Length: 148
Length: 140
Image 1 (cartoon, rainbow over the protein chains, first blue to last red):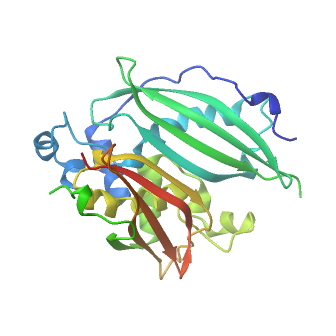
Image 2 (cartoon, helix red, strand yellow):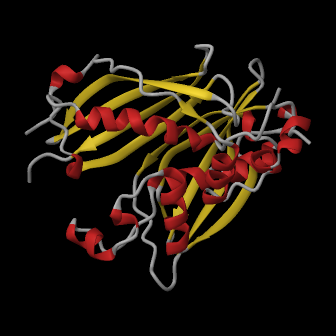
């Protein structure tokens, strides 16, 4: 089975809101070697003008993950999970993610290309806060290896 | 202290760091991120898909690579945009681990937007593991 070209342009339903917890931000920060006090200490974060601890730049992947799971599970998508390799990743922020945010992510498939027997699937997860304002867009390109 | 954009030149090295990874680091990242793909903690599973052994999550390498930039800029909120291409795996030996090195250089300066583009060279065993690794940093 190969990737369904009709996926291009498809927009998925928003996933359930993700509530960003302070301890989750700290846990993720430790895991990516983020030692800045603004990632860990609410007082340091407030002194820098933030409501609470600020998540590291790649934290948005945790919120994005549920949308990629939707994509991989799409019945007519033809994406074989065991053949998927992460090709590119990008995060574009309007504002940082801070503890207390309730974030909702919506995935759209923006591009499907074939390259040397492989398929390149680019998906953008648009992540907004509880007021509907944009926080970050997480963009992944997945390389789906073709049949050997 | 926030770096001053006008003091920067393209090519300046603004930060350098090395990150020693162990299998513990990968388990910690798996738990924190929710990415429990067993190729990041089981050699037998990694080898069954043609890899020489357990490798680091690409998102762990991406996540640590930007930290020297965050510390240079002084606040994680200053990173407006961050992108990478995953070009080579970082194999993490069960005993010896792996060391990922990061060099951050000024790639471009936008004096109107008050943004510096910082280009990252991220290496393991002498080879780059990330391509087009760029962070746009707000220095307003």
